[in-house]
Amino acid sequence: MVEKVQGKNVPELSEQSTASIDKYQESINAKFKNINIHTYDANGTGVIEQPELEKAMDDFQSNKSGNYTNHRWEAIAKGYQTTNNPNFLYDPKTKKHFIIDANGELLEAKDVSWVGKDGSYAKRMEGNNGTQKYVGYDKSSYPKEMKAYDASGKKLVGNAKDSAAGLGLRSTFASDSQGIYYDEATKIHYQWDDKSKTFKAMKGVGMVSADGRTFDNKGQDGNATLHKDGSVEIKEANYTSTLKYNNKGEIISDITRYTDGSKFVRETNKFGQTIVYRIDENGKSDKNESYTFYPDGHIKTETYYKNNYKYLTTLRQDGSVSSTKTFDLDGNLCAEQRFHNGKQVYDYFAKYYTGDDGKYVLGESQETKYDSQGNVIYEKNISKGTSYTRRYVSNGIITYGHSDDGDWSQTITYGKNDTQIIKESNGQIFYIQYIYKDNGGTEEKHLTKEEYDALQK
Image 1 (cartoon, helix red, strand yellow):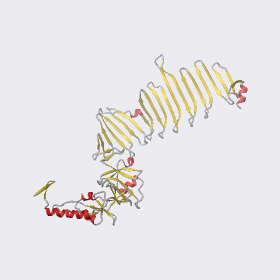
Image 2 (cartoon, rainbow, N blue to C red):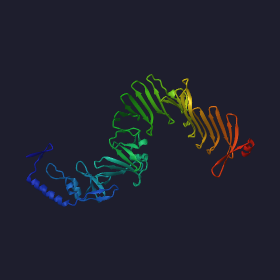
Image 3 (cartoon, rainbow, N blue to C red):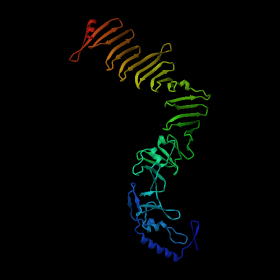
Image 4 (cartoon, rainbow, N blue to C red):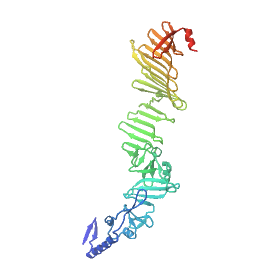
């Protein structure tokens, strides 16, 4: 009589064979009733678990003759211990791990240093450049992480580049920017974690671009394609963009090609300055209209238009901003800022209105100058036909003032000892001293020119 099991014909066991197996089973139960599970924690410290005979007995295998054979049990009978990973046994005498190969033979797992409670395990082996290579696996033998130790095996290599060299990892487009390297042996990408000084495995990643974007083994990620030169091409319905990166993962060139033949270009020059321009469907570029350059290639001026305004930025040859100006479409200056050593030294703002003749006329403006410490040293305001001007010394004290309101104007010069010279548009000149009283009041004393001059000495 033949019983069919999983597509194979297996002879049915006789009563004699069954009795023999049962007897053998009883002897096994008695002999291995105290089997222990031997594991290690994350620090490599040995831990003895409780007996798990029922689980261990599931490892029995049957050959065609019906006799139970298993070299795993033979090893356990000699004193080897099971672990929480069914692939490994542990010999407490030699403190080594062993594995049963496909033929059931017991072989030393030379590089395995510990097996954890969850079935994960680690290997230690010789790395490159005098380092020790550590690889951690999950219970299904998938690599989780890699570490490089120095020759003593106690101190971790502290940076991604040297650690990758010790582990034999190959650099990628994203090594400098994202700390991502590739292991030829495991065909897996690993990303550097600086806090733990460890390379973490990146599951399902075939390729990476310099900005850290991940692709499959064919260099695809949706509508994006990674090319051999490291550039990324993104295809949309009406345009295609090609991005190029530096080793920091920064975009140094972005060319967008539209279906009508026009292009939009964003590129970074050798000085790190960004240049943006367009090329129409006939090949005409507005680059030279938008930029002027110094002989060495630095940007001198940059012009662009937005919301009916023209914006002009002037740069020094070292790349620092000299000034920014805003014009309306009639060429009127609406705003201006000037800078020195990175600090603003001038500010101007203006509004224009349409006059009776249809032309724009200045309605309001404000002009301010600053010293190197950011203190106001000059200001002038114009609003609806009236204006005033003031000058200050660096400590904020006013030294000059001028007010103008149509046919009348007044100029004040501030002198020493709380004195002033007031000149009015009708030609009158007043010399005045302000005397501050203890009760908080102020007395205005009119002086002669001679009295005023005497107080300035």
